[in-house]
Each structure stands twice: as structure tokens, then as C-alpha cells.
Image 1: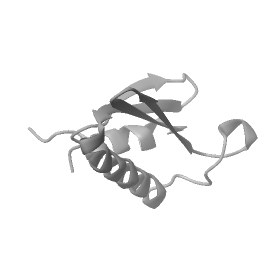
Image 2: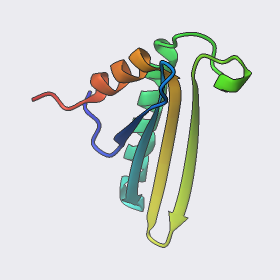
Image 3: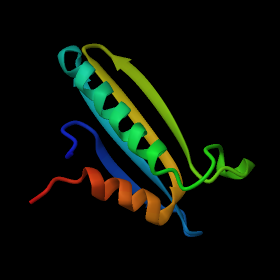
Image 4: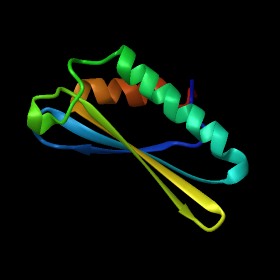
Length: 99
């Protein structure tokens, strides 16, 4: 399922882990669709979890954080996932547009 709103930015943490930030900024009419995409990404992450969820510094294998910011007519959501490089790259590939 290609994502319509969330756009991923990838960072290699250099230790076999990475960070994937998915960001979308929309007006109120598109907000329910963006939330559905966030739920879909999180469902995939949970279903394909590489281990226990929690902060990597505390022994977790992967983690996620969702932040929402409203600025006038626009609402921005940022979903940040951290975890093993291969897991995160599989997540991004799963949601990439099919050519």
C-alpha cells in the first residue's frame, strides 16, 4: 500500500540501526486520512517487530514516537521510528510507490 501523505526521511545511525521520520502536513479535511496512514504504518511495525519495543538506550529493539503540531489551518504529524536498519528499510519498501 503506497502512502499518499506520509513522506519518509531516513538516517543511518551507523551502528546497525536507523531512524525513519515520516512527516505529513495537511489541512483539516485530510487529517483523518493521515491518521489512518499513521495507524497503518504502526500496525505494520507492530506486526513485523524485530523484538521488544522501547527506547534503544533502555534495551528496546525498536521504538516509535508520534508528534502532532497545529499551525493555523495546517496540522503536521511526525512519526519517528528507530530500530534495526534492515527492519526499517523493509518498512519503507513496503509502503513505497509501485512503479
